[in-house]
Length: 591
Image (cartoon, rainbow, N blue to C red):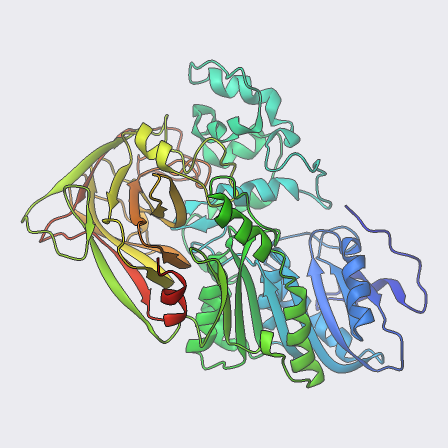
C-alpha cells in the first residue's frame, strides 16, 4: 500500500531528480531531519514504489539522517525501461554522487534495502564512490544459479510469481488474504484448461492450493510460455529463461563474482524461512575471504517479510518461542550499524558481535565469532541400504535404491499447505504417501547435536534419461513422528560439472552430484533424529524437469525417469553436516 507523501516542505522534498550516467531521470523523495545541516545520508532504490517508504523515511529523518527513497529506472516515476539488475550498479553510483554533492549531506552515505533493493545496493557497492561508507542488505536474493532466478540450474518458480506481481511500470495489487495465489493474475479462469489438457478433472475445492498443479500440467510446456498461460506477458522472465545457463548476461548481474570489490562495511540480515536466505551467508563469507573485516551477519526466525513464519506444524512450545523471538526489530541493528559507520558512535553490546543468530531447536539468540563459527567441523553421515543415516561407511561393495519420477505427476516440495513460501512444515505424511521419495534417517539422538553452518550432500546416481533433478531435504524428525524441514538443495543433473557448460547425462552411467543445501543453525535435541530425503521433483519450488535433456525453455516433451541412487563402499552417497561445539547450546538441551 502506498503511503501518502506530503508536498515539498521543510521536512520532505518530493520528486527529486537524480540523473543517471546516460541521462535517464530517476525520481524520488528526500526526507530531511530537523536541525542544522549537513547530515549523513541513507539511500534506498526500490522497484516497489518509493512513496511506500514514506514512513521509513520519516523514521530515519527523526534519527538525524537524510533519507532518499528513489524509484528504480523504469518503475513508477523514474524514466527508462526496467531491466532487473542491468543498470543498478551505475544508477546506484549516480545516486551516491548526487548525495555527496548535495549541500544538505556531509559526504557520508549509507545504502539499505530489502529483497530486490537488498541486491541492487550490493551491485551499487561494487567499485562504489568513496562517499558510500556503509550498507545494510536485508533478505536479498543470491546470484543466478545459487538462488534467483535459478537454483542449481532449475528455475525458482517463486521468483516467477514475484515477477508477475511487478510486471510493467507499477506493481499489480493483491489483496492481503491472497498470500501467494495465482488467481490474482487472472489465471484461475485458465485452470480448467490446464487440468483438462492432461485429461484430469479439476478439483472441486477452488483454492490457491491448486496453483502448483499449473506447473505440472502439459500446458506448462514450453516453460518459456508459461507467463501467458498465467495471464501476463512477462518480458524479464522471457529474457531470463533464454539464458538458462550461466553466461555473460548473468556475470554482468552477479555480486558474488565481484564481491572483493565491495569496500563499504556491510551488515547482512536474513531469516531461516526466507526463500532468499542462502545469499546472506554466501556474500558474508565472500567478504571474509576477500579480507573485508567490517561485516556483520544477523539471522532471525523470520520469513521474507521479517515476520514469524507459519508455525502451525510445530509443537506449541516451539511455535510460541519462534513467534516471540521474531518480534526483534531489525531496524535497531540497522541504526546501530549506520551510527557506527556514518556517525562514529560505538556499537552497543547487542549489535557488536560479528554474527548473531537465532538457533532453532533450542530457540534462543546466540552471538558467534564469525560465519561459519570457528569451532565448527564437518562430519560425514553416509546413506545405507537399510534406510539408515550413519557415520560408518557402507560395507557392501555395491548397493543402491531405486525410484521412478513422472514429470506429469512430479514430487511435491511440501504438504498441500505449501504455497511457495518457506516455513517449518511437517513433511512426514508426504514422504509416507509417495513412492518417489527415498528416506534415510539416523537413530534418535541420546545427546544434543548442534549444527551451525553450511550443509551439502554428495550423491552417486544414475538414470535412464538424459537429464533429471536431485532434490534433497534435511529434516528434524520429532519423537512423535513429525518431520520438520531444516534446509534443502536442488541440482539439475546437466549442471553437475558446470553452470556455464551443461552436459546431458549418459543413461545408465553413474555420476557424482555435489548439492548445496544452504545453511542452518539448529540443535537436534535428545530423542530427535535427522532425516534426509532424496527425490527428483520439488513441485512448487522449482520448475518440473521434463527429463528429455532438451532446451529447458522451449521443450514441449516429457519423459518419465527411473533413478538409481547408490550408497555403497565404492559409491558412498553422503551428507556433510557442520558440527558446532559450544557448551552454551549443549547445556541448554540437557534432558
